[in-house]
Length: 566
Image (cartoon, rainbow, N blue to C red; front, side, top):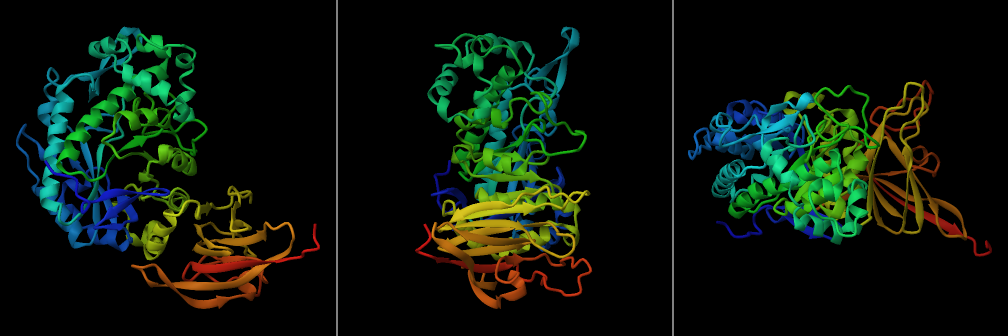
């Protein structure tokens, strides 16, 4: 058993949350997740490592599966995994391993054959169908002891091996425990053992927690506890305490899934105490939905349409309380509102990490919100090994973020000092789906909006960092910033100085001035403009909007006060 070691990757508290520390320094993860089974082959990975490095990623998320490391019970093999780790290390990449143990996307297809073929020892969940029919699900039941015990044993062997093989290198910086847990096809397990547990009194620790922490619970959880709240002393079965319905079923499953994963995570953390988390398949339906797609891979509506009992926002508090061995719960963000997901999963000040998200232009623009507004330790588009770096939208964004990573990390440690944003493509009818962003800093109200061009305005994204007073650092493209003094006696607000910056020292975040901008680059002193690389002049014969170059600039605003103004 290992002892805590601050030389290992770990999370360090800040005034704003937590930062990931690797080799003693804050680390901004610019990540990407492989296709599901890519990392089962070191030979295959040898064909993609360089492509990932060329995309300016510094972190790769990939699987290590239970069936692969323990094909025969009690006999462990890590040969393929070791080769993968060495390949990543050779290319200067960090790894986040995804433990596909008992659960992957709400089912149990990555468990070893000796688990799959022994349902007596490892019972399956049952799905309740019409007419009282119970259908055997392709997922282990969480209401029996052998599955979590065996999973925890395998995971502890994995973590011990990682410490022995990689502890002095920190190639592996975090481990995800399971993948998108929860029950698909029903709101709760209908097996006899689960039914018996459901009819028993609700565990006292859950009742106590909900009562004691009521004011701190997320509103999405409180809204499902009307029956519970109406009782002076809730007690009895789950229906007695919480009422009958799918969200009571979901609460029941969440409590027991959290305990299951905590058992697995605790066993692993005893061997190697690096950050552990689990990810969440969110409910795609409702006020947080952001999609016009048919839900093919599953999605949302009611528990069971999405994995019932996973760490969705309406049971996030349950996971945070009853799976303390997990350092945080991480949302996968595909078809949910991105900024809302970021905000909600900072609940109780846990760090934000997005292990799966869209890999397209729409998705990449949004990462600036995660890093700039919600202090994300990392984001990760899914399926990055099947994109060439030249065709990957993340290549451009990660290159810029990599160059200014120390600056971003510094801003993340200072509460309220930065804001991230994005501006999507204009709609076909010419309407703008993206609103300006307005913030107040240092005696000024700043407005961040889509960058002006004479032709069709393009998309944009980036972040603004307040440096103190009227000074701001602008990073990104496709936007402009203007300011208004908050002084009641101010009669004028303008730009004192606007400088294009270049990174002089990536390790320290030192910048140097490349050009001093003015005139057309400020639209005659009104806007600090950060154009796109190929602005549309719309046929206008004078090219007054310069294309983006370094995508980094510093602006200082000033104001003139008239003391006679009342």
